[in-house]
Image (tube, rainbow, N blue to C red; front, side, top):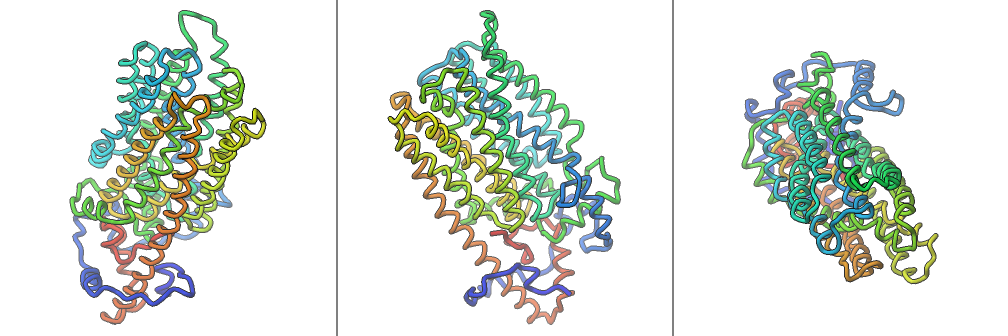
Length: 529
C-alpha cells in the first residue's frame, strides 16, 4: 500500500498546519480531463498502468538509458547531450581564445562583438523553443548544430567589426535551442532522482571545454603562417567539429521514448512506465495558451529567472575576460592559455559533485549554495590581493571563482524536476535561457576597457550579485516545501470527500501522469526543493 506521505514527500516535523484554499480543492477535485489532449506517450501506453515490469527488467533498460550505482556507463543519450554542450560552449567561448591570438577586434568593439552572441540568443529563444515543440526535437537540434558549425567557420573569413558582429548574432540564434531541448530530453527519459546528475554530466562540458580549448589554442598559437593567423585556424577547427557532432545528433539522438529507435517497442513502453510516477509527462505537439499563462504568473518562474540572471552576469564577464584577467597577473599569452585550463577542471569537478549531491539527496537549492560560496571568496581574494603581485594566490583565486558555473546546471535540473505540462516546460525553459542571455549581455559590459587590467568594479559586482542569489535559493526551497505541504493536505481532502483508499489515489495518480497537465493542474505532482 502507498501512503499519502509517499505520494507528496517527507516534510519537516515542525511543519505548521496548512489551511487549504476551498476553491483550490473544488477545482482540483475534478479527476476528469481530456485524454485526447495528453502526451505522445499515450500512443504507446494506456492512461492507467496495465503492464508491470520487474526490477531486473528495469535494470537492463537503465543499462541502455543511464548509469546507476551498480550499472555500466551510459550508452547513448548522455554522451550525445554532452557532445552537443561541449561543442556549443567551445564555439561560444572561441572569442575568448581568439582575443589573445591575433583577433583584429579590440577595445569596445570586442565588448560589442562579445555581447552580439547573446543578442541573437535573446531574440530567437522563444521562437526556437516553440518551433522545436512542433517538430522532432532531436532532429531540430541536430540541424541547428550543423548550421552553427558552418557559421563558426565563416568567422575565419570576416575581418571587420560588422562581419564579426553579424556572425556572432547568427551563432547566438542557432545555439539558443540547445539547453531547452537537452533539458526536455533528460526529463522525458529519466526519473527526478536521476535528472540532476544527468544534466550535470552534459553541463560539466563547460569546464572541460576550457581544458580542451586551452591546450588546442596553445598548440595553434605556435603557428607562424602569416596567411592564416592562429585565430582563423581555431574557427575552422571548431566549426568542423560542430558539423560532425551535428550529423551524429541527427542520426542517433532520440526525440523521446516514443521515438527511441534503439529501444524495442516493449522497452519504449517500459521507459515510459518507469517515469510515470514522477508526473512530468513526455512531449505534446499542441501549444497551450493556458500553460503559457500559468508559467508567467507563477512566482517561482520569476525567482528562477532572477536566479539565472544573477548567475549569468558573472558568466558573461568571466567567459570572455578570464584569459585577460590571468594575463594581467604578468603572464605571456601562451602561458595564459595553459594556465587557464585548471579553472575548467575546477568547474567540471564542481558540476559533477553538485549534480551527484542533488540527485543523492533530491535537493536543488542547497547544491547551488555550495557552488556560489567559493566564487564569492575567490572574487574577494582577487580584489584584496590586486596590487600584491602574488601570482600563486591570485591564480588560486581565479580558479576558485569558476565554481559558480555549476549553479546554472542545478537551475536546469530544478526546471526539469519542478515543471509539468509540455508548453509550460518550454515556456519556463525559454524564459530561463532569455535571462541567461540578458545576464551574459550585462556581464560583458561590467568589465569595461577603462577598468583594465584589474577590472575591480566587475569583481565587486560578482560578489554582490551572488550574495543576493544565496537568499533567493533559500526562498525557492521554502516555497516548494510549502506547496508540497498544501498538496499533502489536499490529497487527504480528496480521500475524505470521496471515500477513496490509497489504491484509488494510486490509480488516479497514474491516470494524471501523461495527461499533459501542469504541475499546478496535477494534484499528484511533487515538487523538489
